[in-house]
Length: 407
Image (cartoon, rainbow, N blue to C red):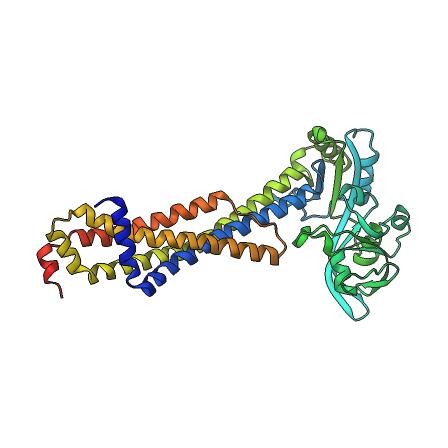
């Protein structure tokens, strides 16, 4: 029996009971589809995060408070209150620092914002005028926070487009309108252009106010949450990091860099950390989805056992007529591989459709990697061989005489 005859015979055997064949394939379809969809969505999320981080520029350093040793315990970055607005101004004006062109101090908190009867809980970001340049903020209307606003503690606000939609409705232009942040009235002076994103990276869902107003009137603090430092170009990033680091050590009267009460991140550091988190999350979800592949494989094996039982007399007749053991094994393995291969192809289509629909729904870039497609093909074929081998061996080891007597 040649290969083409084996495939034809296997296909005919599978079509004898279409419902059972379809149910056996369904487990593989769902498993492969789930794995591909989750891998695709994980990669889409990673690309979205990378795009958001890279859109801020490749020559950006972020100084975060904390990471100092206190009582033998190393605190996490951002977990302390050791940076001030004066630190930021000092970095910009220091003669020791020659590689920095812009510095922005920032303070971020969540707060309730209302306009009329509408309200939203969003991110309030106290900033200086330099933030617009450092973070590449564009305006669709109005103006950004000015130095005069910062110096005079003005109660003015610049809204992200998502906040505009939440408070005033789609397509509204609330310039000149009044909003309330923690029950304090602010005049809207500008609206930013959409940048997209999600979570803490979503600059569309933010309200920008003068840094000093946020510190002294909204939140009652005298520190800043972070300092963004824009280096002159990518080539001087390491030098800029060193200059800023040694300046802050001297300013904070610290002689040992190991005792630094701040941490400096580059965009590459942030990108690497974000990629690691999204990669781990994707792997975890894919592992959970792979369980359904195992269930699908067990279903295939069960169906093949039933098939062997139903066709015992046929197997005995073939062996009595001279069919070799390897032909019987090949026959049943071919049926198993056809089942899983068909399930793999349908699963790939299902996974691609699901990932496209979900990506469109949550506004992520649609991505399908070749590695996930090859993985689906390889896994589906492997499941066919792995879970079809034992039933095939059982069929091949049947005694012709006993098989012919089987009722």
